[in-house]
Image (cartoon, rainbow, N blue to C red; front, side, top):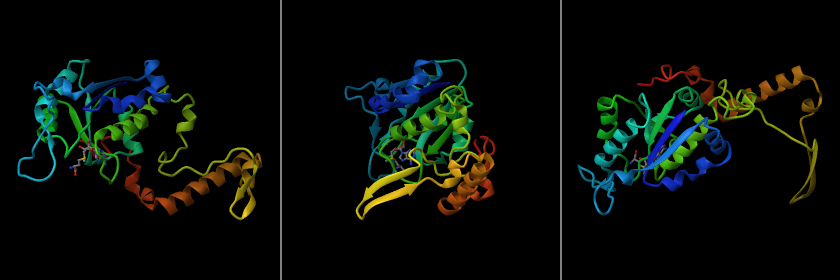
Length: 252
Ligand code: SAM
């Protein structure tokens, strides 16, 4: 998969060199390129923002550097990328959405700052460059810029690209796969002595996990998934949460 990220803070994306995503880049499974939007400016101050038409607080990212950046991106590989534009007003980024995006050969990300990017940039990418364009929200809160959202999205999408996570089985029973949250997990010791404010306590692993009875363990885990999901995220139990393809997710 090819991934191009456009940002005014390329250093913000440095963590993409680390851990499993960094390893996948070195192994050629993910071809990630981070581009400085200011390279596409032509004034002395490398200006990327200006005041908003209609008034109001803050600044808006100018369309000109973005159109040049995206036109440059179009020349980087054959075909067209799917442009993902982080925005709190975008389509929610979910595990089914990440799974659908992980099947695409080329993703590009446009990191907004300030009050966001001039709306005509998305129109240009869709209508003039012929790209699929999707504004995407990481959650119902406001970040200072798109970079943190891109880090999260590239990690969530990248780990679903075949070969990136060594043991593909570990991707199957996770939270948000199959519509339920994951069951609680435990490791050694089976009986954990820990000193709390009221003195020493012993915390034990649920006995079924030590039983060796695989059917009983599977049944216990499934029950835990149901209870945890009902308690923490009842919204996930609604039928519409089961959409997995971009079409089912209502992508344009
Ligand atoms: N004025 C915008 C609004 O109210 O929709 C928010 C702009 S925000 C301060 C600046 C940038 O941060 C956005 O352009 C976007 O790139 C990014 N951003 C903020 N919150 C986000 C979220 N929840 N999901 C994805 N990106 C977000």
